[in-house]
Amino acid sequence: MLLADQPIPVYTNLTDLYGSFGSSLNHAVRWNELTEEFKSRFGRPPTYIVRAPGRVNLIGEHIDYALFGVLPTAVERDILIACAPRPGDSPGSVVAENLNAKYSKQDFAPTTISDGKAEGWHLDIDKKELRWESYVKAGYYGVLSHYFPKSTDKPVPVDMLVTGSVPAGSGLSSSAAMVVASTLTFLAVNNKLEQVQGSEHKPLSKGNLVTMAMENEKRVGVNSGGMDQAASVMSNASSALYITFYPTLSASPLPLPQRALFIITNSLVVSDKAVTAKHRYNLRVVETLVGARVLARALGIKLHDVHGEGHGHGHGHGHNKTKWEKVTYREVLGRFVNEPQGCGPEGDMGPESLIIALKGILTKLNCLLPQRIRGAAARERESEELGVTMEEMIEMSGLSPKVFHEVYLSWVDVEATHFQLYKRAKHVFSESLRVLQFRKICLDAADNLPFRSISNKASTNNEPDRLGQLMNESQKSCSDVFECSCPELDLLTKLCREAGAYGSRLTGAGWGGCAVSLVAEDKAEAFIQKIKETYPPYKDLEGPKLEEVIFATRPSSGACGGFFKFWCRKVD
Ligand code: NG1
Image (cartoon, rainbow, N blue to C red; front, top):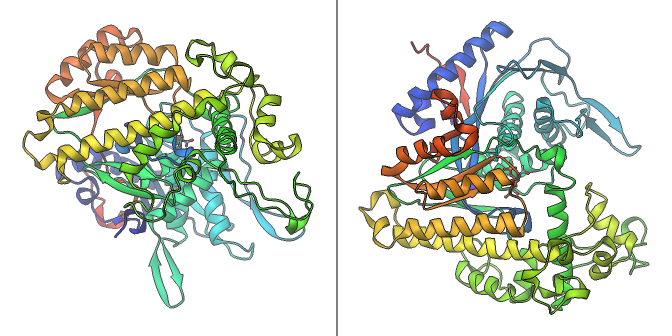
């Protein structure tokens, strides 16, 4: 069965969940503490505990929203939410508490609003300031709108208690883990983990949960791709995931190198994605989307704009309004090479053809440079010169200013004087190529069998070196071309390489957060010691404080529910 079609697992013991008795013991204390605390705060045991892990992206940064494949794996660090329906309270109301005292208790209920035609749910979500409960509400929103379409359908009142071990703002996707966990909580307490279709009960699939969590996270104000939610939901405990988004969401396990570890190091620069979205994350989303339209036009590629009456400038009315396609780079690439549908395992042209197509399109990007410097050697130019102004960008898109704003700016807040269409495209296509090369190295080395079961295969062809080199190239591209690194991450990844890593790169959105390094298993300890000595912010850290910021990670299983009554035992 395809990963996306599998049901959300519901475990009745921690050994099944964590894959081994040993790892489950490490986690049992936390699950029990959460349960005991829930009982003492709410006076009864939780009915469910849901879990959603954070993730580390091994390679493939800022390309998911261009619909190119990425290579993350879920990490052991996770969000746990204990929950139970609250008897007798008003429908849909929520009491949300957090074990971390810095996140204050929240008490809220959805209200209904009407736009004259239909009634919808409303929850106050503050997009200006990052608040922990926004992620809880974002998850709730999707469940309300999908499963309680009429305000006459009443969701149950809920008590919930949250605990998390994914550091916030660190590029390990604590936000997606929170939204996935919250979505799952409200589904579970409202008995929606199964859908009734005719006379059949069908379990909710992992793909359904990913789609919902992606929609839900947009409520917090970030127009994210789907990598984090997919990794948090679909990972398994023995491999990374190759996630593709085109033509539809699909994921397949990827065996990882033997005798090499991925080590996470936190730069300790907090990257607050929601608050800085205007000139960072969301700006990159707009730059890549507009670039795709400009490139398509320059390459003579047909856009699927659907013209209504009064077409041309989008002045149509009602259902006759022109619909402008928000084409992505992946779609442009497919049309560029007349991609046949449905031939590869992911329903696309397949990885070999994709590699050739990417190499081809990388030579066609000059049309994204400003007219004034086209033909000149772009490499030596300053960023500003390579960027285009808003006026230039609108002209290159071939749309009227009004339509341009409607299509590309009305749904998102961005701030910039220059838009770097050329540089962003260069990163997107070259990074997508690196993902496919990384994947091929892993697959070839594993001979399509689980890597870890093959003796010594990984070291025979220098795979870790080749993987490391791709990671280093990715870091360089993120730093110089996509401009999503920061001085601390540049320094940290350099120090990681000097400390013996095969390769090191930022992971996640960047501008702070964590780096991920590929390190030989037998060098891990020396590596950690070296980084502690050389990365200035780590100098005074010892013991658990040091383990908080630098740690090896194993792939972990994805989001799940746990039935309280079966597994909960006191662990001494
Ligand atoms: P982080 O900030 O690490 O959660 C973000 C996006 C991803 C992806 C990466 C960059 C969200 C929730 N996640 O990850 O989809 O675009 O940046 O590769 O916005």
